[in-house]
Length: 334
Image (cartoon, rainbow, N blue to C red; front, side, top):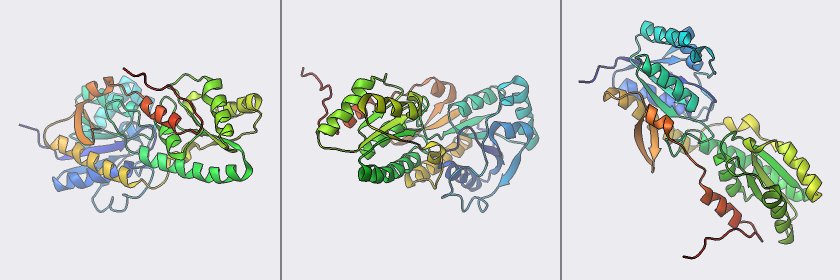
């Protein structure tokens, strides 16, 4: 028989992502429907150590669905990486009478949740990161909004690049993953997209693409660079040296984390938050709520953390095929 759940905590940790607030809202309102109290832990795992909390109600989260960022704030915690810090966090859970924690964030957040679960505090994770690089889930909250923000910015840049017949180098987020860069690159019709999963061949990946585009009649060029590939400024310098163009470099930076969450992020966050609470109600815990083939699934946290996600290189092939005058490696006939 499952233990009766009376009170749970919810926190957001790591980098913020649009859609975290709708996820918190869903946790609070679903819990209320089951007669469960929710305590909001502010500033992530650090807040759990210091006892930084606020009681959340259905009315209190009523206007958060369209808000970007996170009303619970977020922070990285070096203290939580220590045994002493984690024991203090467990002490806070016991003092507050928490029967479990919903942790909203990325890989680091889930590793923290795993350590807490090993100390006897049930946890359920909800994936939220604009990088979409969590191995166990097809989709992470925040990715769609971040893509739309980057696309909107690049569309505006394209207007001025066309007017002056210039080359633009745009750096988007993605320290270890190119999902954001490749998705955005396809959507804006980029001349080239540079991602950390693909070793950079500057001559082939940049110079030849610019040349092919120019021979096809284009006079402006858009290069999208994931930050994990290297500095967009350095890429711009190389283009100037090797191609003779004078690129304008734009680093979008943290603007990609902001803004009201898109419809997809609001809906996905709401479903994930709902199922996170339902997992506790049904006696499940120490898991991550994921999307697989469009459906919500629950995966044990240790198994989920061991899973890897690779960049869909077929998207890169699609991007290459969209370039006028380009020649990409075609599949060999059997």
